[in-house]
Amino acid sequence: MIIRVQSPEGVKRITATKRETVATFLKKVAKEFGFRNNGFSVYTNRNRTGEITASQNKSLNLLKIKHGDMLFLYPSSPAGSSSETMDTSVSQGLRPVGAPQVVEDEIDQYLIKQDGKIYRNRDQQLCRHGPLGKCVHCVPLEPFDEDYLNHLEPPVKHMSFHAYIRKLTGGADKGKFVALENISCKIKSGCEGHPPWPEGICTKCQPSAITLNRQKYRHVDNIMFENHTIADRFLDFWRKTGNQHLGYLYGRYTEHKDIPLGIRAEVAAIYEPPQIGTQNSLEILEDPKAEVVDEIAAKLGLRKVGWIFTDLVSEDTRKGTVRYSRNKDTYYLSAEECITAGNFQNQQPNICRLSPDGHFGSKFVTVVATGGPDNQVHFEGYQVSNQCMALVRDECLLPCRDAPELGYAKESSSEQYVPDVFYKDIDKFGNEITQLARPLPVEYLIIDITTTFPKDPVYTFSISQNPFPIENRDVLGETQDFHSLATYLSQNTSSIFLDIISDFHLLLFLVTNEVMPLRDSISLLLEAVRTKNEELAQTWKKSEQWATIEQLCSTVGVQISGLQEYGAMGGSTHAVSAAMWDCKHCTFMNHPGTDHCEMCNLPRT
Image (tube, rainbow, N blue to C red; front, top):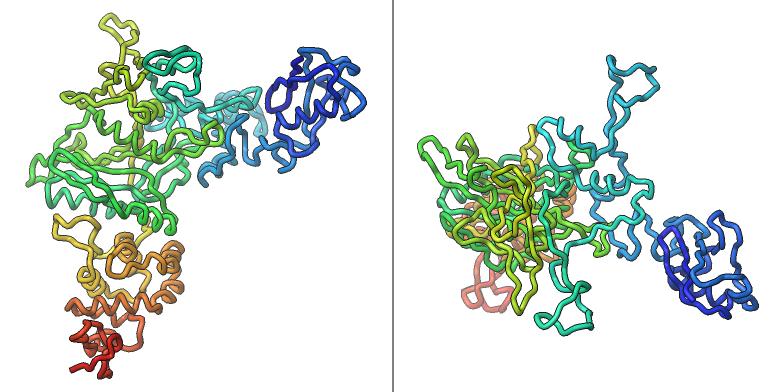
């Protein structure tokens, strides 16, 4: 017989027999619900009366428990308050049954604990109550209130993701059964009732058709560059070559207070990977340093938050204007760019406790540097929807060759089954019709995000009049080597070592250069830069690694006057390096005052 057991986590069916003892039955219940011990009680009535106690002498038939009966289970302690009650309990917020335990981002953990409500002052004209009362005109609004968002300046079309979660979990059940399902366009595996595709398919394994809708929420509500210098240095490549360029945005996620429970992506640096750019195309090459860059950024308290590319065509070189090409009459993002953005977002999923997969959507953003209505360079931020991410992940979306504003949903073939993709449109008579997404306007896949610069610039890294060269700009003649490092050090005469060394591209060079990579010995310096601690920087400056870097710089023939200020060794580093001599036999650089090589022990002359 089958007995139903209802708990705060849901209802489960337990298979048993009439002659089965109560103790055996309760062991089945504990195993089915994931209990580690007997920290629960089972009752025959919902009001916690008629408790069923474990007994080896009593059978289910003796307790008059029949097939189809409903029993009620209650944990001995509240769910989530003890690690020994149920495996399915969570310590933070709600989580659907069967969802994996995941650690969300710090900003998500912070916003979960916030009230999020929009508090309003007492209206002097409409409110008729005292100062301690509340009415419909002054009661706090929920963070997902659409009327409030629409009346903001400018209006907000998409609520924040955490406001969307509050909307789902704000009902009478408090979101107990909420599960954010990721869309799948693939045939479900494990169906044995028929031959595999293309010989057979059934309703159990066939993915559902997709109707594209405007996403009501967005995972990131604002993109902010810490200062103009970050963007200007990135744009310098286009200014000098006329070719388009691409980079990865490194920064952090913080609270965006202009929108209830909003998230802001703050950009602190731009890393430019190996690429081939022309006036109208970009090709991203394989980057052997990608893993190291992410590792160094993590030690600096940063992470990859998005990507940026240029689409700029000069209109009048005398005025410095650019062509306004991306607008409502053309497109905002091309289909190929949407597919690339979807691919990046799939690589950077958003960890989410409410998803059975442990992730839902992405916080990875796209920024386009293009011409605006005033023919000046504007930065436009976007994301693609979760539906687009699913279509890209399962290889169901293609770009159109002759129409960049249109995508194309693939047709099923013998190698791949593709579900039907539809979108809704308005015909010439004003009626809403459903169209097959062949082709597909990519506006259905795009979510726009405001991109801003702060009134008071923020500087995670120091800004220099003569900055260190950016990586992978050899086409401009700007190379990262010890000659450029010596030049940089000689031109920066600051007495504060931390200001000299706090350059994202310089730190990457120190870690990734082939002559003397410092990947295993630079953690202390990265911690000093992250915490802006001059004492830690001074401690690292006295290390052997920095002394070796100084000696390598002194061999390139640049007068490094600045090294006298912050050399690791006592006295004038330039005077010491001038007296050093290189061995004619093994080329080792020896300290002054020695007649034999310290490496090969051969005489100096």
